[in-house]
Image 1 (cartoon, rainbow, N blue to C red):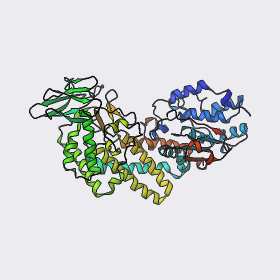
Image 2: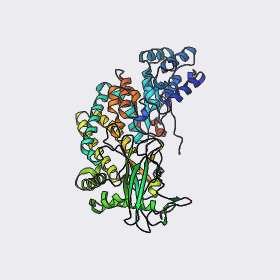
Image 3: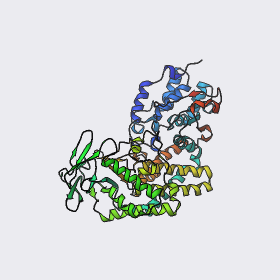
Length: 537
């Protein structure tokens, strides 16, 4: 059997350099930005691997590999040196592949039976090869179709343009319908978990960052909290000077805090269930369950939830404002509780609330389950949950209308909107936390190490949250190097690459088990298997 280029002359050093350039966060429309996935291989590397597996081992093929994959491109030509941004020259690839292999690109079949986020099948299709991809995870299956199949199939039918139009419509709708639930100038909120001293009953806001909100030299970068021992109330202020620590803690097997009202220590966190942190989560879960599953009116639940969820600080531009004592902010949060309770009973909103139980085998969520968060909806505060449900409801209704106009095309447009919503949700749960060194929110999927505080994105703030997740303005202008990780710049790049290439019939995506794949594609029907198998479990 003729040896392949990958076996003898693979340009390891050049590929490693390309991988190093493409791997970190850089402002290009990476497919990673479509939707979170746990393992995405570097696209430029996938392209070189696939083509080197197709070409014979000879000098001409070695030079062709460099030209067709972008390796030979002069340094500084590609944005950030990322091979991903190099579009293989279609006609030249076809001519050289046919001459060196005796087959046209569409006659060469590349398969990735564990395709995950889609790097390998995407780059195989960009080379013009017939591509088969599969994964047994339903989320991965949708990501694969959105990354490879749909752009190739619908680029010339206006997929990007229609999705851009629908994204703008959704963003405008969210501002009109949900904007009054947030402070007009708020960009992010940092919430304290409110715990009551077991000795005197005083309400104490608990956060993990102490007195310093950010390491940057921003206005109101410090948090000062004063406690009234007689009324058992507190007052929070954002200040420019470093205040004294307002909460004393002791560490050991159990983290204890000194009550600022009565001076007695109590267990804040530790093992077991007899500590304030565990009680906070149990009460939150019980109250949310009453609203969502017990159809209880907002009434008493509002008082409980306002005590548990304290909007301590909001980000306003390059500064912070304490809002724990702001009546307007408190009323807006209470209004979200009222709407959630009312609409869960009187409309179909409940259909869009994630009421499924968190599976016991879900190890990612084990720490949440151990604290009593047994259903998915319990991972949100009431405003986060209401906004999530309303946006999901909106997308579902638009999807129904779009599918009546054009079945699969309409569903495809709605899928990209859903990806945008998923990005927002990842930064909008009670298991997020505040990163004061970066002055930003740590996402939920990054690791479920539940902190004392949590954060909330303002979904309707211009250029943030939903607009950041979709990035319609960046995509419309084609300013790819301004992207901060949005969905639409990726979709535009993919559609640009597939436009007028008629590759829609060269890709097939399966929801399938790799161990049973031969029964799907048949025996002896493949040229290249390029797969990066999972390393866990």
